[in-house]
Image 1: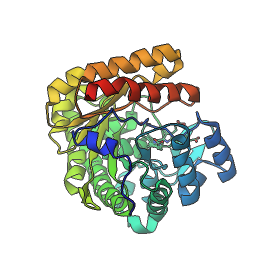
Image 2: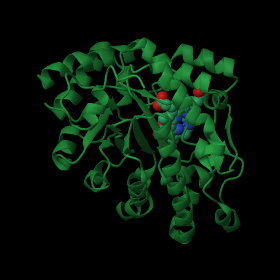
Image 3: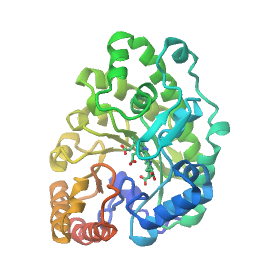
Length: 354
Ligand code: CP3
């Protein structure tokens, strides 16, 4: 394997000294880029991109050709995992993801089993290997999965939801059924992320997009406990280097101390928590990733620089910060504004590492 030419991202996740604050953006490969929309049109649809290692590599590389990003992220989706479990993922035009067979009755839930990921998700591992080749050591590659709870939300609701009625009905009415789903998801995610690491992912992120809709007690029992199980089951070293794990619970700012106890190397923050307060709360335990409000990118270039500077200042001097948005970049953002942000982070952060 080619040695890494830029390992700033991995060093920051491990709180090792860096020259500047590394930056990547959640959903950095996506619809705000015209070249992404062109490739998706050639592939036919979104799943056509995900299931073809050549297309997945092409779109992963697109934001890196435009911007001096410090990490690449595998192009795929968290919902390929429930698809591999037989739920039948599809994307209805303009409606987001949906499942043909959501988990609504006890028989379907009892029948849920850990799939053989090498059979069902080999296209993902092939994409990881292909992206590593295309990167040729330029920056590290991030692998990812959804958290067991976030996956369960889509599996039970059958798609996106605003009230999580079915998941919460199960949580409060038949908690043992939800635990069975979460246990199956956690075991699957362990296999899935370990296979991504074996294929070449150099860090992994667990996206807990919906953990923040839970009460504090339910968050610990139904989301955090299963993420902790995953962290404990992951291969933490590969190719002679530590493979850092990042946990991101959107809306999880009040639970950072508990998240830091899981053994993760870093925590992702959305924009509702002050990153300086977060740093004081978690101390030396973990690095932090975030946390610019993604909507700042709709403002002026001057506004983007000012807000990026505020996040950098709030974290303060020293390593342990990976700059990111607090959630994915919107499809309506002007690509030039993303460039302004990345340059500002690099320029404004150098004095913090002098
Ligand atoms: O970050 C990256 O660049 C890597 C690719 C990536 C995608 N999805 C591509 C995608 C990643 C890391 C994800 C994760 C994901 N997928 C999450 C967790 C992170 C988050 O955003 O909270 C979730 C909840 C999903 C499920 C999902 N996939 C939804 C709700 C949607 C529709 C929403 C939308 O933006 O339309 C998707 C589709 C999807 N996944 C797109 C992309 C680029 C847009 C599909 C398209 O091209 O039409």
